[in-house]
Length: 146
Image 1 (cartoon, rainbow, N blue to C red):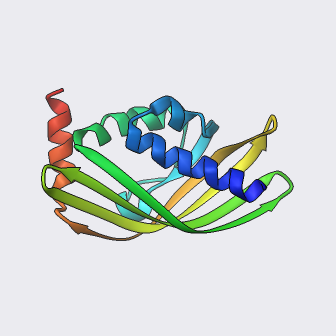
Image 2: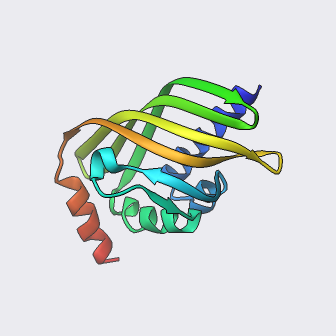
């Protein structure tokens, strides 16, 4: 039962991003969480609020015509109100007839806070990208004109 709830929360995070439903995304997160996309983007780990994360995503993702995240092969371990999930992800980003694909695995930690599972750590383990790798820059350029 807990395993299914945990997977549902993680799936909701990505579905919210694809739908550009930032409230849905924020509802999955604790008041702060450790976000780690360093394997793809470099930089440093960051402890951020849900609003900081969704503001960053909202400044980038709508530059694509649409995005689609596919998640699979969930392994969930839960102990004493802390859950760790490892799973694979594929993110497709579309502009016109072009596509940029990012693939990797994720490690997401959730804690039970006031009876609800909330994401406290979210790490991408980048394994590769394919398609038109110029699309992120084009998406950013498109966002400058909105």
